[in-house]
Length: 340
Figure 1 (cartoon, one colour):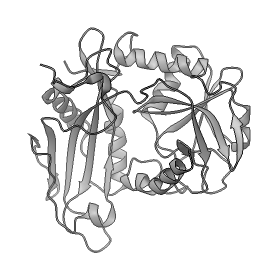
Figure 2 (tube, helix red, strand yellow):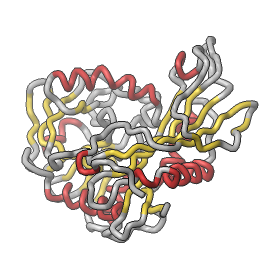
Figure 3 (tube, helix red, strand yellow):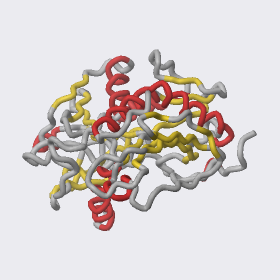
Figure 4 (cartoon, rainbow, N blue to C red):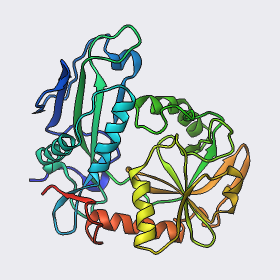
């Protein structure tokens, strides 16, 4: 039976649910893991995560589809990306098969928190891992905890997807040979000062340029860019320091295979940005956030799509991907994991 939640007015925040999955790594192996109602984490005051930020995480969503079934969107890619993140941070990999089993089981255990179809809301899924034992010398931890919790979240855009104004940041998000390509907590900690400053200046997000030359577009603090050319080609920046967004990869597939558009992943130089017709930020939370204006140190780049609504191509991409997630458009094979 669904929880008594005002689904229509649900915000994008944390709501404690009934169960979460916990597994511990000790003596070189993961234990079987348990489902627990305890939402508290108990670790050493000298834990690796607290001293040296040894942690990574993922973000996925479960939806109620039109036929009433509950599904998860491409969690196998979350599992693979977390494997890559853990390996790069010298953390033990939580196996993909076990990751998927734990994720599906956690959603099942909290099935009454999955928002109903048509509410615009969804169940956000947060798998994460961190070093738990005492580490005072700079080195990887020996013991780790892997957890998954879920929380119902409302639509990212309460008033509809209105285009936003972002700015070009003077700070760097990630170094060329750094950790930009993995979903490490430290990347997001580094972006906090920049985003708070951007908000204080009246901007929604930061556009980060490449740290080496500051001539190429990378991404924002938490989303990849997609651009639409004046002849309706979809272009997304390519860089070894960009996080491989699951939403962005899905959008590029949808653009080509469902909408018949030409797609291109390549280096995007900042000086060509004014030539694009549309711009959007893509990620799990909002799917696509349309961008109307990029402020480059006082000089405004205004996209022809304007500030009133999503550009026409961006809207087609958004509607198609959301339709796949909600079950009104047939999904590519393997994209939808049925939970109930």
